[in-house]
Image (cartoon, rainbow, N blue to C red; front, top):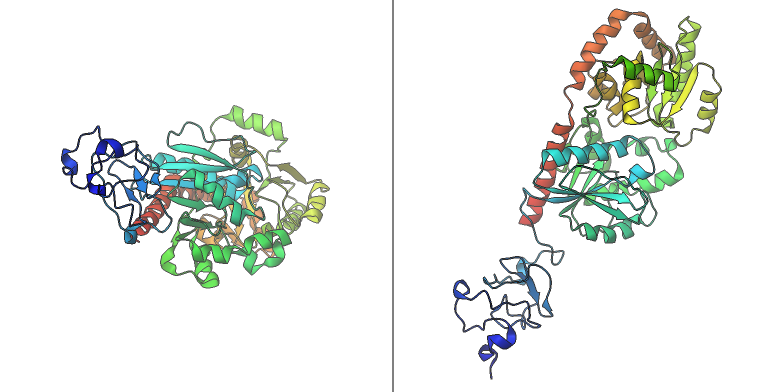
Length: 465
């Protein structure tokens, strides 16, 4: 008896001589089949391509794979030429994507990159409710993003910046079943069967390798290959995008400038009780110079300490307050800061406390040797705090005309800029108004929409390919 004469009651599928799919009974299901009959989904005996049924199931020559439990409405043949390159991945519509975002660094360090990933996830969830977002966290990190219906959590064994990350993380990401993986921390795992978007925050490690540790240098050595193989690169400023194109040779059309923003919580505070409580809790004086960030060589804190000493010598008894974590290659700097009477080291604080500290500060100082964006500048401006920052990297682009720009190597120039803000109330008022206007040009909703557009463009290209 030929294959075409096999009874459907024995095979569970209609034979090739049966009625067309539109007239088949829903009771005749393929899911009991161990080896599909020719004419059901595809000729499994002669072709190796897989073919999804119209309801989401699929068959191979080894039988049922996965999907919805019936293909009684008929199956659409698929040839090997149309098979996706990564096997049985089904392309979703570009307006409903499933994206995995790397949030593992938040367990190890509360810095700018970790803040960027967390804020971006929250904003994406609000701006793009049709898509699903998977936050990839360290298995030891018990935090999660609450109250967002389209956010899922995947906890992985591979820590951030781990040596075996390029090989172990791709395997763990398979559990996310994502259309796209967003590497928010410079480096994408390779090889990775999931299409990848990489965010580059700065390329200081290439211009100034003396400012990073040997371990960090090994990690960042993966960046050139990551950006060349990524489907798209997000740069947080035009200055960083220019560096990616000129220093790493990435085609300009694959680099997208998506600026950061301050969280909506950063705004002028009107609750005097909260401000007074923060002042008492951290022992803050009535006037002080504020620094916010990880204390590492790129931040140029040595020059800031010298400049503040000159300000004090000129008669301004204003202390320097350092907020943020201790960084790398900073042992001598830490010893010096903690032994000076006019310097107060607070360390990392929660977001609510940081908002209060910004509002209490007289001026923010950020004399960095390089910055890919400089988020504290926007946060301070959003709170109405005047800003003195360096003229390097992306800081002039971010600050615009709302800050006093200084040469980071010119200690007397930094001191003079701080003195002008501390001494003159009219200068502070003018900078406050300009800063509020400048900060209003940045927003996480804009950042999320621009990022989601990058995701969709990548998914659309992948579907076409």
